[in-house]
Length: 432
Image 1 (cartoon, rainbow, N blue to C red):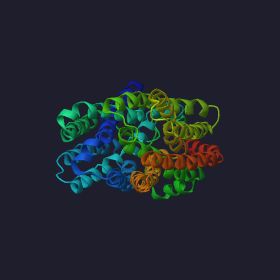
Image 2: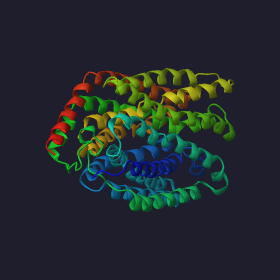
Image 3: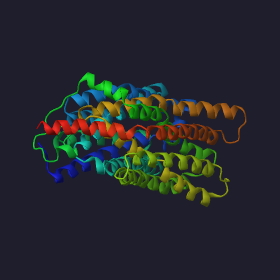
Image 4: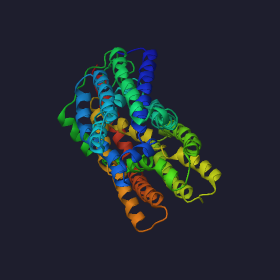
C-alpha cells in the first residue's frame, strides 16, 4: 500500500542523519591519524592496514546484507546495522594494543556494508527521475561526516583524546538504531516505479535465486561492476592519507589543515548532489546521461588532482583553491553509479544488485590504503622527496582511467537494459 508523499521525506530525513553520524564515526579516525600514529609508533603500512581490514570485512558482509535485505524487513535490518556500528566503535575505544585496535576497527566493516538496503528502500519511496538527486543528497553525508570528524579531531579530540570521541559517536549509533526501529517502515518493493503509479496494491515480489542470473548476465551491470573494482580506490586512498600528507609532506599545522580541507570538503559535499542532479537532467534526455556525467567527472578529476598536488609547497593559496575545484569533481560519479544499478535491476533484488556492486568495489578498494602505504614506504626507502604524494597520484589516476573506460563501454548497453526492465514492470502492472 502506498504511503503519503510527506512520510517519504521523514524517511529521507532519518536516513540522512543516520548516514551523517555514521560517516562521521567512520571518517573520524583519519583526522586523528597523528594521535594514533604517536600512541603506537605506526608505519604507513600499519596505518593503511587499519582501513584495509575494515574494508575487507565490509566486502565479505556485502552479499549477506544484500540477501537479507531482499528477503526480510529492511527497516529492522538497518536498525540492527546501526546497533552494530555503536557497539564496534565502543570496542575500538577500549582497545589496549595496536593488534586489538586493528581487530576492533576491522569489525566496524560489518555495518559499513549495510547501505544497499537503505538505497533499495529509498528507491521504493522516490521515482527514477529524481533518484540521482536523492542519492546525491544522501551521499553528501560522506564529505560532511569527514568535515565534522575533522572539526572534532582538531578541537575536542585534542583535549578529550581519540578514545573518548569514539565513545560519543558509538553512543549515537545505538541511539539511531532506536530511532530507525520506531520511525522507519517498509513499503512494497517497486512502490515508486512509474508503471505502478495508478496501481493501489503493488504486490509482493520476492527474492529468487533464479533472478540473480539476470544481474550476473546484464552487460551494463558487468561493466559497472568492473569499474566499481577500481572506483573506490581513490576515495579510500585520499581519506586514509590526505591528512598525514598535508601534515608531514606539505608542512601544514593542524589549523592550516582545517583551513584547507574544511572548504574542500564542503565543496565536495555539493559535488555529490550536483553529480546526481546532472545525472537526472541528462537521464531524462538520454538513457546514457548518468554515465556520460560520470565519465567526464572522473576524467577532469584525474587531471585536476595531478595539477593540484604538484603545486609548489610555498603557494598555499593556489593549492587551497585548486583543492576545492578538484574536490567538486571527485564525487560526481557516485550517485550516478547507485542510480544506474537501480535503473536496470528488478525492485525485489536491488539490495542484492547493489551489494554485488559494493562487494566488488570493496574487494578492490580494501587493498587501496595498504597498497598506498606500501608504495609510500618503498618510495621513502628510495629517497623519494614526496612518497605519499606520489603514491596517492599513482593509485588515483590509474583507477580513474579504468573507470572512465568502463563508463564509456557501459553506454553501449545501458539503453537496452533499462528498456528491458520497464517491459517487465509494465507486464506486472497489466496483471494488477
